[in-house]
Length: 428
Ligand code: URA
Image 1: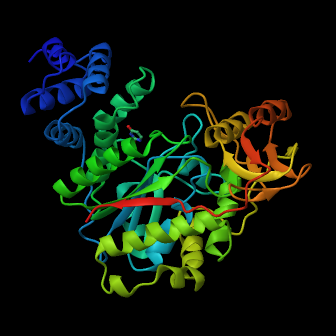
Image 2: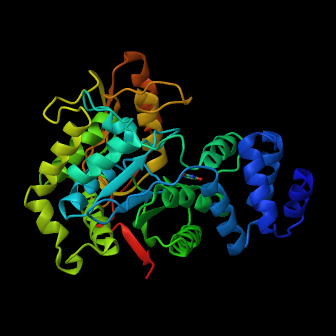
Image 3: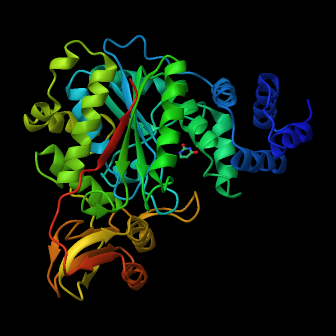
């Protein structure tokens, strides 16, 4: 095979053969296909697309580049969740212990944040002592004994994707549905989960800005999962405004614990319960149809499981979560109903305050972030505090505040309303 031939085929709108796909992924992983060749191919895929058959093969080739985990020795079924990412998306934190409290094992392999969306591991690391790196054996033991684990994906899982994703990040080729679908699903299938629930975000704070694109991505991923024997369901959910009331690592941990205590923001609770119910059903755990996840949440069982999950990874669930000591407020200039909040701007502000990183190796602040005191649909009076910014480094404060200028739209004529996050469900 020849990389240039493969690039030309895709450039001209042709389909790649199974052989070509297997070869190019393997050769790229080994270093025989150069980064510049793979980036040309990724751009050709972004512009020309791929047939479902090609995407399935591409995914299989990425899985075959590394190890596959096996949870079949566990005494309970497994279910995992993947979110395509958004601002203030801390759902994994309350969700994993809640689903585990229903008798399902939840292997939540997670990542760190890059750019304006936060990463689950960065959030969890705001808990003093908590450790993200576990060996596969430690993970299995914790899944059996506690039922939930949130940890870093090992380097052995889909190494082709690790290399390709880093390349796409710097070549403007992230936003290609075939590449996103195969990237996400190769890792989840290799991980070995029995069931998977996808939270596919739509809106200004998400990869997919339109419902049509989000739907196509969701359908593609559900098809890939089912073809690989993973029971897969997707929810399309609204990310036009950020989720909950906070964006920032420690602040989101605190908000998640409020949800586990039965309180917290209504949207975080709604989405946590909806995803939990789907995971329980998809897992096929005994008595799944009778399990009421809301009752389990309100019983305190999920909170107790959270505490065991944190302690099992060296964290102190009772420790105080750091909060940046440098604080500034943004107030409303007029009165009206808050009709829109730009998730991207809020995410960027949290990032500039120190919650996110510009380069992979940068540290993040546990105490940096943004709290919003009103959300979409609520009435606000002139002079009322809209945002509180926190940072651990005083010189970041002004940029964070400036980034929030114009982030909310207030309509003096509108009536207060409530919005539902869940747009649609895709899957059997
Ligand atoms: N997340 C992934 O893991 N891969 C993508 O391509 C996009 C988001």
